[in-house]
Amino acid sequence: MYDSGKIIPGLIIFVLFITIPIWYNHGDAGNAPKPELPKDAKSCVLSAEDMRSGHMQLLNEWRDEVLRDGDRGTITIDGKQYQKSLMLTCMECHTSKKKFCDTCHDYASVKPYCWDCHIAPVE
Amino acid sequence: MDKKRRDFLKVAGISTLAGLGGTAVVDKIVAGASPAVANASTAAHAEKDTAHAKAPVAATGKRYGMVIDVRKFQNDPSLGEKAERACIEAHNIPEFPEKKDEIKWIWMTNYENCFPEKSQLYKDETTESHQVPVFCNHCDDPPCVRACPTKATFKNKDGVVIMDFHRCIGCRFCMAACPYGMRSFNWRNPRPFIKETNKQFPTRMRGVVEKCNFCAERIGVGEQPACVEACGESKAMVFGDLNDPHSEVRKILKENYTIQRKPSLGTHPSVFYIV
Ligand code: SF4
Ligand code: SF4
Ligand code: SF4
Image 1 (cartoon, chains in turn brown, purple):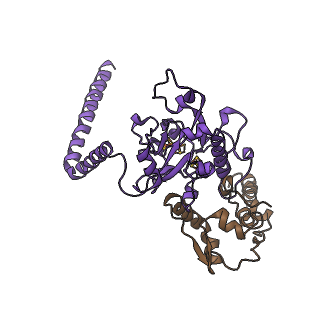
Image 2 (cartoon, chains in turn blue, yellow):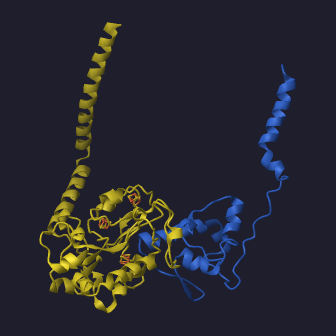
Image 3 (cartoon, each protein chain N blue to C red):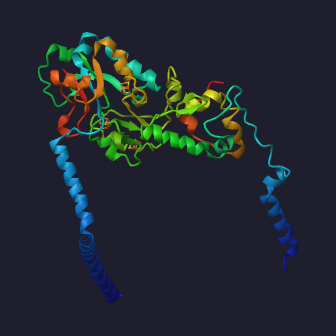
């Protein structure tokens, strides 16, 4: 190979460069986030797994039902009625956006625009 | 070279003609091939048009509306301010110091601004000196809804024209379409200009249009609109279902001479004024 003296170090530098994220973090994906759960509420509108994977779809469904279809029916859990509302239901139990929503969103580097308009609880 | 250019122009000319004629022919063929579809849609349109011409009020379902007694606003000038404040507090409406940024859902305006089609020469004293509340008319045939490309503005099942702020892209077509100027645009981030935040209702963000929503969030749970509530016992504003012949609004409409804003435009406003 011609110029192998230049090409091979060049390739090595290139590979090292594009793998910066891996070796910079020592091959460790960082600690899994630990969102703080509400202390006094035992059950959510869905199971923890379903909420973890599908809370965004659920919020969209609620939005469409309430706003577009005018269906403001409530959800009953343990005999208590809840509205289909991020501000008035979710954030009633999850009183801290920072300790709950943000922990995972920051970890996954997603920036939902909910809070551009919806009001987060005062912390 | 010359010859070639000539040939080219000829071919181009002929193909343009063929193209123009061709589309017409294709259109004919398509129309001929599916006459049922074409007829059905035109028939539906025709039916809709005559329906509008004959009976502006839809006979089925709800159609919320309001009757404003302008005389009561004249007798008690504090009512206008009360209604405005109630709406601002209920909906987190920002109050900008500069007029050009203003966001308004309901406000008091001069009679001639509210009813520009009425004769304005030699007004009587009360008309001259008093103001009239204006807000979205929740038109039965709302041009803002037709103009909105994202369906962010839509008419809900109760005949209320509301906005899904999530969908608004801020194109402001609706503002151009509304013949009453009842919509405002958030040129700036409204959050820092909200005096008292109501936790029951979201705010808006920069680049979104907003307007009176007939308090959809309140009437949806059986409450009265905030401005109606603020007028209290005075009954200066009465809210109800225009399609229900036994509703209070219908009773008032039966007993009083009322006018709508710019009726000649055919938007069929659901807000009526006793002047
Ligand atoms: S008053 Fe304007 S904003 Fe309200 S429904 Fe009619 S056209 Fe739309
Ligand atoms: S500004 Fe928003 S509501 Fe108005 S027409 Fe555009 S998308 Fe629709
Ligand atoms: S009906 Fe509700 S949103 Fe409309 S002006 Fe009155 S208080 Fe404001």
